[in-house]
Image (cartoon, rainbow, N blue to C red; front, side, top):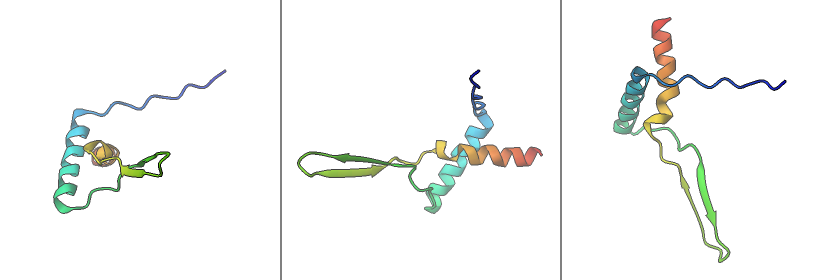
Amino acid sequence: MKSRKKKPRPYTAEEIALAKQLFERAKETGTLKEPRGLFALGLANGYRASEGIPVTYRDYLPEARLMLARRSA
């Protein structure tokens, strides 16, 4: 029998608001997280390009969830 993976709980409005605050604060202080991954492109003519995926408030959602969980504990 296959085990089903639990879907993560959707983020609450409070968690999203806190994540947006954390993101804005990090932008203002210049301490944004590193980009999550690289998008790389290589063509047959030897041209290569790579770019990091931009950091958004969504990258701060796990931290916001943890912070709110600690406050309520």
